[in-house]
Length: 267
Image 1 (cartoon, rainbow, N blue to C red):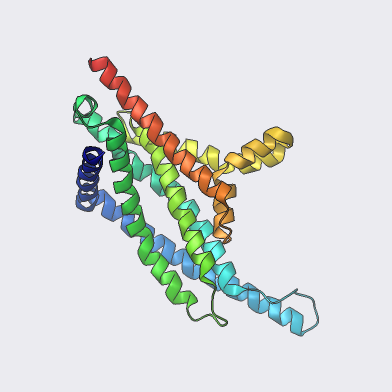
Image 2: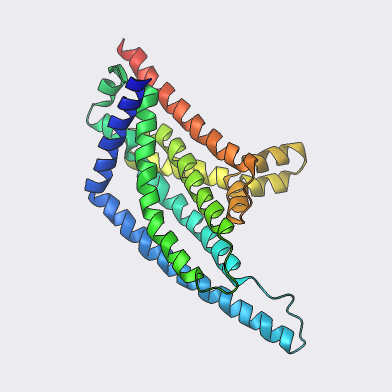
């Protein structure tokens, strides 16, 4: 057990250092920070404008409904946008997890090394997930700074549960993307196939609503969108956490089996 943990740590450190040395990582980070910061401002302005119109409507007796919880609406809408942005970025981050090993002809060495396939897969996934968390952290601090001015005080449960949803979503997508990366020599093809797969899992909720019945309920339960939306609303549902963890384990299992097939071919 100690040996396995040491192997995971070694892979994790090696992969994480690679991300912070790669120019592509800094390009992705800059793109992500600029885009998400811009959308945070835009979402805040739109929600505040809508809330102001709602209040004016109530004061003038033209309806408008109850007062709106502006900080909650800002955070929920922004997290929804951030999730959509990550759907484009995560396949790019996962595309090189194993394709580079194939290009350098080191995948066969990994497959035949004493390090278990699970240890390699877990170490790689942990490294790319930590890199994603470093992307999210500055934006999360910006959100807290913006929402700290809210009166009455903003409930932090939605903030923490929503960002847990982002991390779980990232882990699930990266794990599935890692499996696809282990099957391809082309990073572009791996990124494209990962995006298509994630898009299908994202829209299963809409397909389930269209289909209806027991089959529709199954599709909705498997939807990334349905469970991510639930978490961004501050609802810490165990079924949502279990679903995301299941996708992570599935990706790791399939990746390990893919590399094990290479090990079998080399024997």
